[in-house]
Image (cartoon, rainbow, N blue to C red; front, side, top):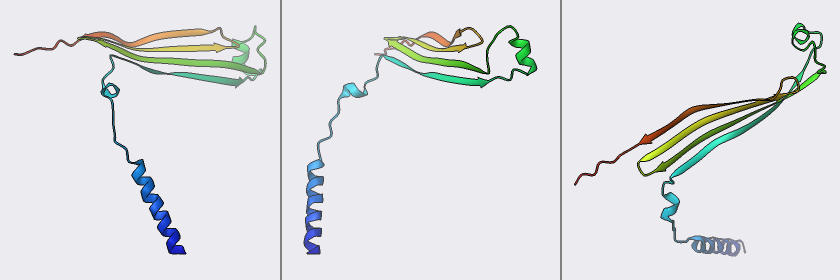
Length: 127
């Protein structure tokens, strides 16, 4: 009985493997280089500060504000890495934007380009 069960199991295993074998196909459009690329990331970091009202810096910096025992702050960052290629010309951009908002300080944002340039790559045709 055990040999019959093991024979049936092996038969089902080989038949399933034979049916799973298919012809591998691919499209050239899947591997062609695109004329553009956009990448980057978005980051969000909330922070909760506990404040000591008896501390010297609290009295110095927040003497005229009624903040409370806690301060909620939101920080965000957007990093963009992009390029576009058209013929012999290409444009590349890397940019960072930081955002900060707090219960104590007004919202601020700062955008800084790290790289932004145009490149030309002429090709020499030799006959």
